[in-house]
Structure formats: structure tokens, C-alpha cells
Image 1 (cartoon, rainbow, N blue to C red):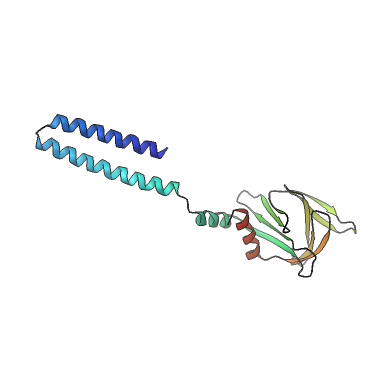
Image 2 (cartoon, rainbow, N blue to C red):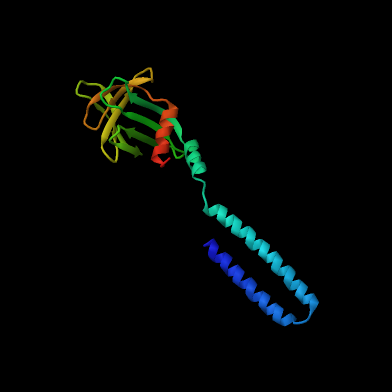
Length: 178
């Protein structure tokens, strides 16, 4: 849209310059005025073009950082080192107050504003069930907030330890293609 405006301005300048040049035939004062006006308009077009180029060329790193800055880390868990499966689960709150979940088990990389419900494992442990776009998973933080359980999409329960904020933010970067 900005390019169309710039093109119209340039066409207008060219047309006005041609008309004034023809009208001025031999008059030095009018020729000087036409030259000055053309130069001023050319400067405005150049500034507008630079601004349009800056607006149209977003910096992906700045956009990624802006998104990261808008998210508040709420917590994360990962399966313990000796677990049969590597799984990460983390949560962030966005500027609107929504909770964004990320679930990654190597085969499934799911993220978004999941539906949640409290439920129990087969042995009676309460956990938060996440109903994502690619399956159902779950987690529970123990009272110490640095350990808990993770439930995979098949219902298997794994002991979990804290997934720190840095590792969780790397998952956010992956969701954004970074």
C-alpha cells in the first residue's frame, strides 16, 4: 500500500515538473522554483520510502525477543535423567493472562492454550490433564515445586524434576521457528 502511495507521488511530481517546465519556457525564476520544489518533494519521497522499507522489513530476532519478553515463566518439569522417555512440559502466562503450555516428548511437540482438567492416575495421584491439539498429557508439581510427575500421551507416568526457565524459553523459541 505504501509503495502505491509512493508511486502516485512520484507520478504527480513528474507530471507537475513537466507542466511547470513547459509553462516556464525561458523564465529563469520559474525554472528555479520548479527545481527547488522538485528537490523538496524528492526528499520527502526518499524519507517515505526509507520509512516504508523499515516498516516492511521486520527483524525476526527483535520479534522473537518481544514475544519472549511478553511471556511470564510459570514453571516447568522434565522427566528425570533415568526415565525411559525424555519429556518437557512448561507453562507461561501471556499479556492477556492466558496460560500457554508447551509439551515436548521428542515425537510430539505441542503448544498453545490447552484445555485443562484435574484427574487422577491409575494409582490415585492427582494431576493436571492437558488437552492439547495433538493429544492429552499431564503434569503435577510436588509441594517443593521442583519435582513432580509427567503423564505422556499414552498415560504412562514418569517422575519429573524442574525444567528451568532458560530451557523452557528455548522451547518457546522452537514454537516460533527459532
